Length: 211
Image (cartoon, rainbow, N blue to C red; front, side, top):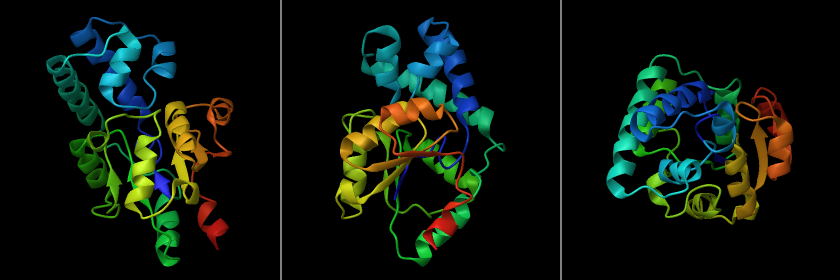
């Protein structure tokens, strides 16, 4: 199993959207519309999202300044408010009990991953991880999920991926994973059109399915 983090382990999209709106205005001089947030700020690393918004890939200094500001704002907004998606812990327990390996495949950096794991009380539960800094091409490119499968010693075709964003679904499906997408961020019609095999609201029924 390959899990995205934001929108899959925790339904935190509102905090990211607010941070993007505020910091895009401050740093890029952009006023982001709801359509921008729905279709351009959707899966992937910050420089690639900036390119979608502006048409130009940011230089290293701008990318670093934006990243630090935006992710810092996100953490300040989300601190103390993150909760796991319903049914997740029971699902992970069921995977552990059956010896089914799982990995984290996220565009987030190490600081945000550590923050999310601490806030959710997961500690080192996701031992195998692919972070944004581990790949040269972020979502929607298949590289993140190909690397996640590789780190589990598996083919991507042998993995089930959980995503919530259209570009994340495209990344996982493009890698060859079967994708069950959560509707925490995008509507099921968009997720299915992007390549998801199924959609679900949360993980509440998954432990029973594994049994």
